[in-house]
Amino acid sequence: MNNTYLFVYGTLRRETNSEMFKLLAKHADFVSTASYQGKLYKIDNYPGVIPSANPVDSVQGEVYLLHNPNLILPQLDQYEECGPGFAEPTEYKRELWSVSLQNGQLIQAWLYRYNHSTAALEILSSGDFLRHID
Image (cartoon, rainbow, N blue to C red):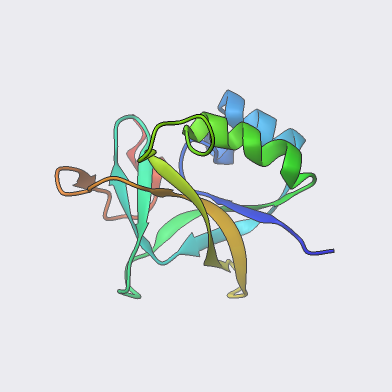
């Protein structure tokens, strides 16, 4: 059986202690801190990420191993307002991308990619959403 991983970089991270993080924690095991080759933007009081071809662009986050992906992913899709039932184009798209675990191992993990223009958005150059929480 293939393992199903999720990379989180914003309000689903442990340190936020959000209600949705608590739901994720009930249905997944923390694997490692990790990074994704992308750019991080401030959308509102939450972030969005887009892929980047530049290897210096790095978004910090965490990887979780999902116990029952068919149960938890639809709930997370609802939280991220993407998937069936939401008008296109949705704000996020759930996609599989390569992420690098803290030990350097590359794995494929689901992540929520921002799906709108970033032209008017503030880039979070640290790549770490937790450093920008008020």
